[in-house]
Image (cartoon, rainbow, N blue to C red):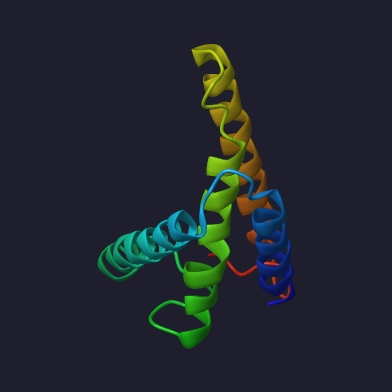
Length: 119
């Protein structure tokens, strides 16, 4: 739980400090779409295929925290830092680096509690 709360705090601070491109309405749209898509995808993968879950298998209220306030700021960070005006090679390099950072983060949250919360 400590890892989740620290992640929520850090990612939200970074997302809103770095936000120089996105309008408030765009942030709301990103946030809303991310929550809707994340809920749909997670419920299919978690309940139908039992592939992964947060904290414990099945529905739990604490699992709403990463779905609603952790993942949307990551999308905001991605869109704020994405090199729209650069060459294709820079875009590919940015995407590869971002995916590597996400994979490292997922390895960290796979740690046992209280730091990890992803199973």
